[in-house]
Length: 228
Ligand code: APR
Image: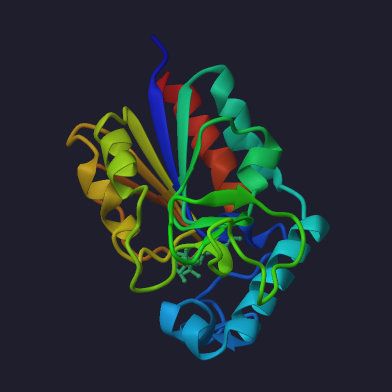
């Protein structure tokens, strides 16, 4: 039986691919107030701005590549049963080769009906005001905005409960319920947290690796190798 490694990732793992994090730039995300572009109220106030913002983020995916950290995590599948739980809406884990990825906060390459959150489709082009679902409702990005429920959280909690090893990479652990997932790991499960500015310190079952994702993942692989 292979051990089950559960890996929770945040914006920091994609930073070295050139995608900006959320909280490293004074609360602005690509020049926008997060409340303006990542809330249902912001979408109601100015749908064109919000659609355009995510159109740009979707286009940006064509200009970025998975980095070595994404690739190293994908390679772990040779020796472990790996589940990645990501807060990221990019597709870099999948493009690096990871086969089991839970997106907690949605995906840029998908859109959904603004009426029915289960009516989801793949979408590669720009999304415009007037693009409607089959039932006639405006389509919107398949993104979990602030104030909205996180449909994948129950599945993510169940996975964390079964983790033999938990790894957390590149997240400020500010946003719940994602930040609370580590509490579901069994008490004897080691937790490794890779982040150059870690939000918590080492202690108990938690070992902090205060490095970037690509450097810290190398340390992680060495530690896993030593511990068998
Ligand atoms: N390698 C690893 N971590 C890094 C790197 C790097 N090269 N560069 C920055 N970081 C770390 C920062 O130190 C910070 O702790 O990445 C983290 C990014 O934190 P946030 O910007 O808060 O991103 P995240 O934790 O993913 O945000 C959670 O908030 O806005 C919402 O829905 C959005 O999914 C997002 C959620």
